[in-house]
Image 1: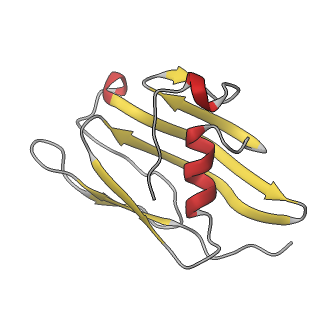
Image 2: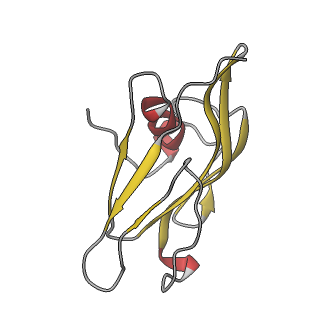
Length: 117
């Protein structure tokens, strides 16, 4: 199975929440954030296209009001991840939460998110 280089999410926050960096797209710990303050949560999300893993076991939390960006080379799964959050791609495995609500099986028009490129 061909696996592209992992997405490395980079977290930049202001105010009370310290910034953090995850390696291999794995959430380690995010102290000081109540779970109810998480706007976007991905739990062990993967997307396979045939035998190619576009996104492989990605878990992350994005807190309310946080500035978040994903950096990585072409083909590493950035756009696929955004498409799964928006409902335009179904994850092969894992769960997508928006505002604490499981939206994994909801169509895009029933999700309160927008995507701009």
